[in-house]
Image (tube, rainbow, N blue to C red; front, top):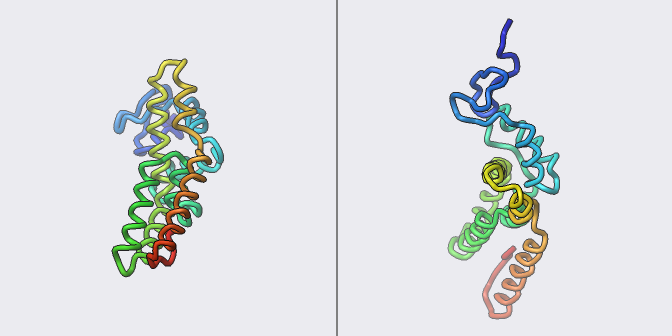
Length: 182
């Protein structure tokens, strides 16, 4: 009888014995029930959608998965999902490309396509890092960490959108020729 039935590591595919806590090849932790619940807490809104996407990506071992919101609004999607470094970095990159190069709009479309393809993987890695940090925290700090770093931030999203449009209006009033800042 095969002891390895349905017991392949979701990260690297290495077979393992039931009861093993970690993959001997890549170190992946098999305490999936608790990790999955923590993952859902950090995702917040649409946790079922992202949990399903993450599961598919892990099982098939692929880094790509289409995300319409990330394609249409890459920087805003990142800010909404509390990935501020990526969000503000993308905003800056999009503005630099728009003003510095003749083909800035084409480059921004390319960024949207690339981010639409890889956003779920980037977000999965972000959530995995948060869950890993969560596991080493004291019990009284876990809820605070979830509230601070998990879920979504609609207020930040609205503030950035208002700020972006304010900059666009100011640029027009100051005589800058812009076609579309947003």
